[in-house]
Length: 497
Image: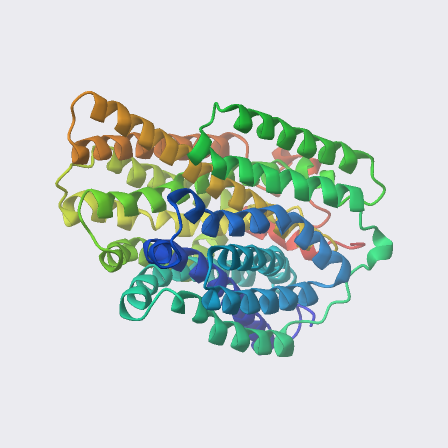
């Protein structure tokens, strides 16, 4: 299916891609709500319980880049469909799990399936929708699904866990997965890929997969061992060495897994760095605000999900209804700056959270300002994919998803560690439990707002309007639009690609 195919066919393909993403994000948020029930039923220790999350994150984060390149080589539809099938089958195994080992192993397999599906989704959207306004609408819909999946998961996880049992948080994936699989087989464009003759770079694949998996493992283990522990320092050094070896390999390989030329674009490099900062702050916010509501305000799982719904609703509404129009009119960079400014204000307000909060006064303004993420992520996605050619859109998509995953893991680990340490200090100085916890959360939200402020400064100083002489040749692909909002069309229309 070529981008010139009928609109109805491309819309059906977009629905399939969004449905696959919805299932994966739904699963991610739904599991966190059910963790206490899983712990009681399977008798997990607190340390082992984290592996129901960590096993998934390690497989998912470690394989995204490789999965994206695999899509370029053998066809993105094949990789997407294989990932959906694997994720759905693993969800069944998770639901049937009767022991700790079975659940953790099934979660690891889920992570593999999730990586295969997620890594190629953006690349397929980019090639399906070359016209700037259509692409903006498609990316907005993709962002909307992400927000919808997070909000639905938080509420649905509480409902299923309380009304039936935790097994059904995984069984819910089965009808979604099967329906999406059948739709994807029918409507997604059949692409043959470059073939392994184009170069698979097995050494690079081994280095980056091992490096990313070890990086994610090291980050998630800091909650148990601490950042200064010898094991953290040693594993961190090995991770850096593996990733440095991967970069050196890409600079010399005849057919690199990740073409380093993509980083010559300030917009692509900047977008990925900004995403790490933004997602670190917002993933940390999502986890910590839920803990604040439950541990300080006394909310239950379902009430917590409902309390967070306005944020998800605002993000969904902005990304679906406004982002494409605003980006087409004002450009990606301007809308990214606007979104980041709203997020800085929203998270900054949480530094003044009281022990006895009024939801409407103390929390709702932040939930509404979170709509800035709908602007920021749509603009950032377009910028992050702006250096991709049709033959490497998969690996560009995998790279963008990888920085998102690493940012999320890093943000949760760092912000939760800082919150816990400050809470412990306050408790040692005589503060009661509620005020000590609140103080810890306030500090973490302050750090999160600072990360977003740094992201704003980078967006202001590093990113450039495409199509201007200031951008330089590294930032202007072979065919570039006449204004900022048109720049991304070059990724699929440049001649000779």
